Length: 112
Length: 111
Image (tube, rainbow over all chains, first blue to last red; front, side, top):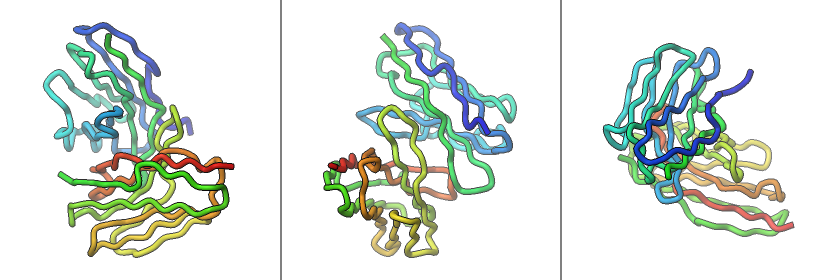
């Protein structure tokens, strides 16, 4: 199994630009999670989906952030417009019928 | 939301010694208690977990103990090795989905 796949692995952009992060969960997993990790705030759950439906988006920081899951094998996290304080590592994770969440390698986002 | 505190924030031990990290939480509804290990520049990886109906779980050199009444659980690593050096996070949660990560403990195992 390839594990959770995220792209890009690194993204550098300028303030005000739109950023799209992508995630492919482990095949057969029906839960998908988006996390953000910063030195100041640690690891935070932003949103999670079950069977492609958003269940809890209470961690999404503001309206500039949006997440979609059009099908069972693909999800996006979009930031529009991006700001320097959005700089972080964004992790996607997925879970199947067991209780374990498997994390992807992360996308390191730098907003200048 | 859940208030999670993890102690200590840094821990330095000699190879072969034991290490203990404690996590306290506030939400009595939490029913799942995992510990994650994150090496520098890598993803968090689950190392051990426990459910609320169990008091202790052991996997080779790693164990987790849970005191649900006092709302804390601990990670125990025995016979530490240099490759145990990493940041460890507790993440109490509800129904395996909504995790609240602690601030992390940086463990340094000196050879």
